[in-house]
Image 1: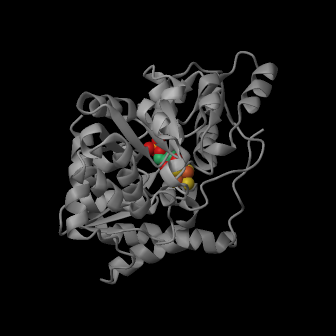
Image 2: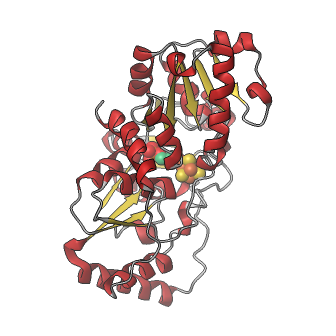
Length: 364
Ligand code: 13P
Ligand code: SF4
């Protein structure tokens, strides 16, 4: 059975009026506006996006658009990337400034700098031994850290290629903030699990011994996504016991155990494409965010495909959900009135160094 999103807290008539007002503001702004929407965005907002995509696709879109205003229906780090990659005169807006990412918040510059220093004390000069790789789900100042230290950014769709790039240059990688994406990618490259250690950022030396650090190829930050940690291997076992012909597809932010039991693992864009290309009648179990899974269910039921959410409990990206029709409508209407509300602007020096790390990724 398909789980339902949390009910919208406003009456249908108000909901409809927001939809009409959004359309009117969008029409008034014309080609001065581009709306970018991540796949986890709720339907009432997502349907208005000029371009939708995963993090990589949206970054490329932000770099390519010529619009004056980029309204980002996603989370804070995505809007920061849009600001860094767009031209200085373009304005990036996040309709609700509290739309963050709990995983991104698990790594701060102070803690990453401390890790770098402590790792250097064990390994010698960290800049000669380690490449820092940050998942795009991180603050701009961590991307800048990677830019300064010869590292780069990765997304869920190019993590393997970025790790290969990193290992072509230095012996080891410090990967933050998502341990699961790092582990899943390293495992896929054939790196043994005991050569991927977890750095507990609240403990001296990450809770590791110098010998463990010396032996490690990838040092994984102890971060995770609160949504994707809800999916468990036993959910897959139960589903396949009931539907042995079903196909399982998961996002690489899920645990290694879940990814190993899945037939396919990839970014949100990959998940959409794989289900779209599957044969009519295919039954899917999907380990990613609820709004996307519900949309896929609606989109493909006409082809006889069944798309089921992996967790028996409702888990959705609550921060992404903060971009609601009211905040979205306010952002657009204020632009029509000539006011810029909730601008995301990354300070110059941070943006410059973060861009170095983003450009290294985009060049791959
Ligand atoms: P994608 O880049 O695969 O869309 O993932 C972004 C994200 O935040 C997943 O939790
Ligand atoms: Fe962050 Fe997880 Fe939400 Fe993705 S789903 S934006 S990683 S909290």
